[in-house]
Image: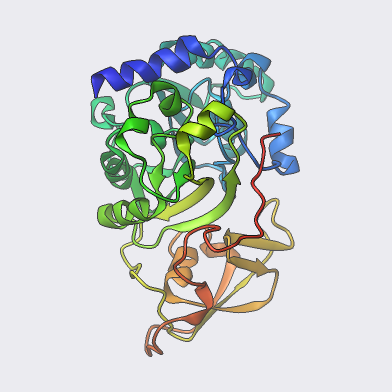
Length: 351
């Protein structure tokens, strides 16, 4: 394990000088950010942006005043976006194990504090391994939100990472993260390839193993928010990977005791008030739950508590109770993985 961690630090600290040095397009964001994120990005120092290696947009809505942890924060790009969105009274902590990345992130704290018009910095960076979070003495049940952007695939003990995340989150808190997944388990030969591991491919979890691990540690009902097939624009890497299909997926995981392992029907419904910033017309909980403003939508019990027992409570009207169970809720879609049966999906390239 120590040898693999040293390889990763070497790759991201010395092999890569900027995002353009990546040998594949797996570790890069495939989606166009919304305008308010673009505005936040325009305030971030160029050196921080140049050393970004994420594969998605790991930033949800309604962040004002939250305490947030970023696992594998790198040069600090996402932390500095979040710094603007949580406001002066929020707090963002980034964790990374690569000295060169941390040096960049720390060097620009004062620059961003002034740029954002803050009296004091609301972001800090800690050196640490996300597989050894206990060494950082972070308080259990203390974070509203934990994010990660294309980093957990680099961890060897992914179950421990998710278990530690569960312990660190407050009740009703969430993990919102983007990562690379595969449609089958990666063989041992590919896992030993340091370049493929560094490029976020050979450490990718088979989607079904991810679901099992998430549920085992307490995240009962993982929800996919965004997913995109990845095309690898590198002939040698394509030949090594063969028929393995890779996906960039953003998941949200909730620390809620009430969640069941299936979507059950209790005759409940919700209506979105339309008052979350940047979501005036509708709100997306995940990739199959869109809530138009003022429209009453039937929901399963899990979706009901994901809205009622979290920071989104004040933005919805809730209808129904838990008095009567009507069986399986039919409106949450099937159990097939992202894109597995959609032959019309075209693989996305990086911008």
